[in-house]
Length: 394
Image (cartoon, rainbow, N blue to C red; front, side, top):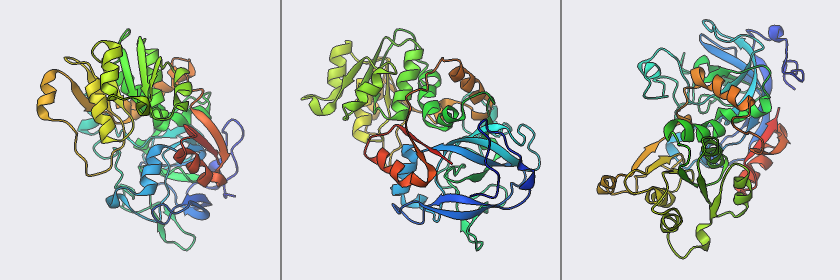
């Protein structure tokens, strides 16, 4: 058990006994590529200037965690490490200079931060931050280039995606922590740390899906289904789901998918089938699979003359776009989207309120719930394609 009293059912707590002190708690630590997560006692150091220490109540597993755990990109390998970036919890303490949060606030961590001061944050053309943007190579804190995690004998344990949520306590830069309504379900709010915000935001912000338009979603995992939900809420007339798992159509129907295509059942390329049934292609296509062949099919599924393809899948490096430059002269365009183009600190609280008001339906994204100790089983559910989000309760 951690040295900090468990939160009450509504997330309340009394952090005064731990403020400014090292907390000993449980974390799931990985010590090499594809090695099992080991639940062990670690030390979590106090937050420094413009940092926040939070107690994680719920965390879930995203496909990005799986990709980094497999360690497809050797340059990103840093161990021992605490993975995890989708979560919700409460503020235990704040460091010097933090004024937008206080002890006891309900918060969600975000991997793509917003400092509010840099030229990127002040621009309306991007949601990236010069210092706190998503960076899979970053494994230490900005202040001093050191970690806030250590083993019981003082050896460093490294951070992941500005967040590291597979632990009872974590320390983040304040730019990567968002305060949410205390009345919101923290279980559901955990989904806004990555998957749902990325998918819905891609439909709303990146593509700006219009009422009556047609959409194709390639890959019906949590992000793809969130794209469908975002398109449904915008009034899309037709949402085509593409996946090699037929069970995904059942899940897709609940969030607005009107048609389902399994490429394994076709004798023709997917883009040709979509062109046939839509009369030339869709207005918007979204690639959520992280596969270059799928990306090309998504691009060619977009309507000649005006179709837009949004790239959301995590691709291994180095890879290049499977397009000839002259193909862009046919009027199709392609763009990437990070965190659904939401500016986390300034825009996510309103999105959370919209979710609370039912504009976006979060029910159904959490398909499994397990205790934190069964994190390896949760990963296997994702590997086997059986879960969208498996919520771990700490």
